[in-house]
Image 1 (tube, rainbow, N blue to C red):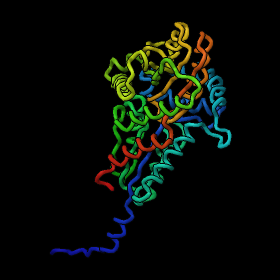
Image 2 (cartoon, rainbow, N blue to C red):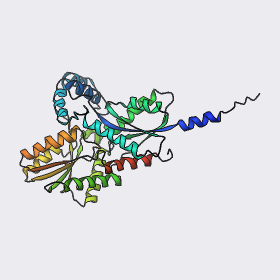
Image 3 (cartoon, rainbow, N blue to C red):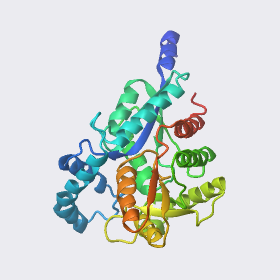
Image 4 (tube, rainbow, N blue to C red):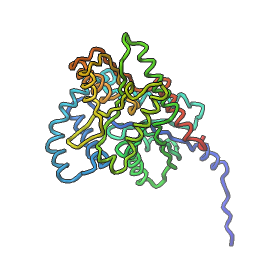
Length: 345
């Protein structure tokens, strides 16, 4: 006997209309508070990730819990206080990432079934909380946007790891897409060039050299096959070509090394020190690997490395802001998102 189940077409239409697409911007992370307690919680989560510190053996755990988490948080908390957004009681990275999310939502508001949100890989708002919020709003498709122009296992891949962990616990999973790295994207390279030209046009001096400083990585990670260094080189070469500069005018360096292993070279701080000692008096630094200003750009480069330069004979130093939620920066994100949403909107 054949059983015919009637279709409630009105209900089916309502379900289709309720279906939405979620877009989740994800940045690295930040402490919730600019004190030792907040920094300790953030560092524990960050440094316990095997994508960040691959050898999570007993020696590392002893060093992390016995030394690093008992000494480093107080020092880093002082650094965070130098750049903290006291008005909103949060780090600039959180303020800027929220701004990027809000502006993207406004930019694509004509797609009224698209919901834009943001998260941090470490700290808050967590990826889990925002995926839960998006699915609660009816999003059955999800585009995750790691805000890292250059791919690395320690950044882009660990975002995916966390997304997969969250989805692995869900019975009704949203369909997933992840945006690719955009290290050589023409819009991104143009935006970097525009940001440099605009910033330098407002200075009372002309820098002799521009340093492009990317976040560092242990050399052994590259030796194991991580494409990060090659993508940083590709970004720098494309930016040189776009601006008509050679390698002596736009230099590639790596910052923020940690521990005792060999990291990618040349090191930013050592390069800046040598340039000053060699007689360079006017210097500009851009950080193309950061989509938003943060501790590593506002404190490490704009303050620490400025002091290194001036202490060794340099006179005029400027740190060029990241793309942040500027018009050109948002154009990069918007075009990336709209491209990857094709077929869904």
